[in-house]
Structures are given as C-alpha cells and as structure tokens.
Length: 233
Image (cartoon, rainbow, N blue to C red; front, side):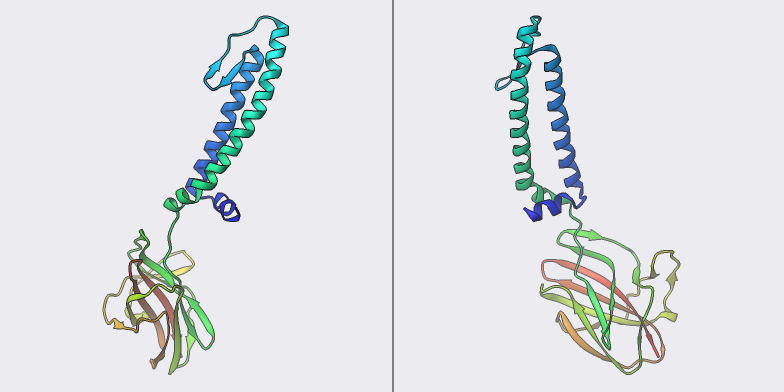
C-alpha cells in the first residue's frame, strides 16, 4: 500500500494519466446524476438506462430520493473499483514510463568522496545519449602518490570496466552554465580494470588537473560512462 501511494505521488506520466481518468470518471458520474435529479428521471446502471422525464412533482421527488441513494451507492462502488484497479495495474504501468538510471560511480581519496557525473548510458532498456563527457565542477584534491577507491552502487556482475586518465589541459572543455563541467569525449588510452564493484587503485601523477573517464558495462543490464575531476598537487 505504501509503495502504491509513493508511486501515485511520484508525478510520473502514468500516475498523472490515471489520476486524471479517475477525476474525469467522478465528474462524469456526478454530472449524469445532477441532470437526472433536475429532471426527475430514474437512472439504472444495469442495463444502462435513463428513465423518462417526470412531470408529477410527487413522483419526481420520490425518483430523486431513489436516485440519491443510487448515486451514493454507485459512487462508492466506483471509487473502490478504481482504487483497486490503480493498486493492481498502477505500479506495472508506471514501470513502463519510469526513467531508469545506471548505478552511481564514486571515487574516494583519503575519505573524501566524489560522485561521478553520468554521461551516455543504457540501463534496463532506458538510454540517454549525451555526446560529451561530464565531470563535477569542483575537483577532488590529491597529493601524489596517492590511493583512491572506486565504488559502483550495484551487485550486478560487470562484463567490462576501463578507465582513462587525461590532463585537463589536453582536453577541450565545452562552456556551460550548468553546475558541472563538459568536455569533448576522449577515446584513447583506456586501461582495463578488475571486474569488481569496489577496488583500490594506486596512482602517481605529476601535479596537474586531471579528468578521469570510467566506462562500465554490466551483464544483461547495460553500460555507462562516468567522469571525475581530480587536482593533483
């Protein structure tokens, strides 16, 4: 039940559509009953039928009272039916429209973490093409030689994992007003890493600003490119 209401309040397209349909259903039903009340008609839902307009005031009042009871009963039944339908089908329909993101990649140096910016990826059928490399705006500082830990937030087995370390001065940065940095994708000098979700790597680099590119691929799930930024002193 909690998951259902979390999904309903998520603001996803499917949740909005289902809520809109529910509201439209209630408005339609209320409108039909208002019309029948005014005209003193009798209404039945099975089989669907609107009775003739009554002229006799006494008959009209009796019909209106009967219609009020029917209105309350059918409204309650309708609301219960729609809620059950939403609970059963809602999360499954919502899954179709859910934006799927790859695991988070984290680089840690001396206890300080930097979350990698996700570039192009495909994950569980959902894809996003960025056509550029993204890195955090602020670099993570390190003093060479140093050790850093690389973490991936998933237990899905890796099929490949590679890394490229590049001097920022040799890469072309693309101006942006976003709270991150954008670079042209560099496709050279990649080294294969062990297929572990968490591993420690030793590095010795000259003082400079470096862009680290991480490309990961998971079995039957997808792939992703991540960018990190470190400042070596």
